[in-house]
Amino acid sequence: MGRRFDRLVARTVLVCAALAGLAFAHNHTTQPCTADQVGAGGMCVTVSAVAR
Image (cartoon, rainbow, N blue to C red):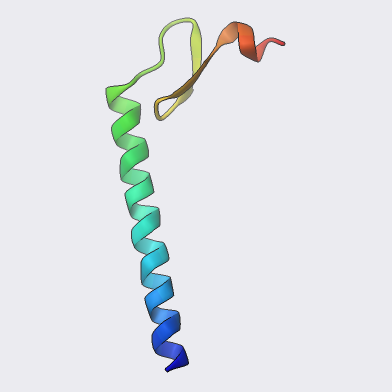
């Protein structure tokens, strides 16, 4: 029973990691940063905020 549970957890972690990677790639292409921003995956900050 313990091995079965471990496999279930491992598969769940792999599926979640794959979905997170797909979401990051999707956001990176659909929400690019503007010229005054830095970041990736749709998570951008302005350059003035980084310079502080």
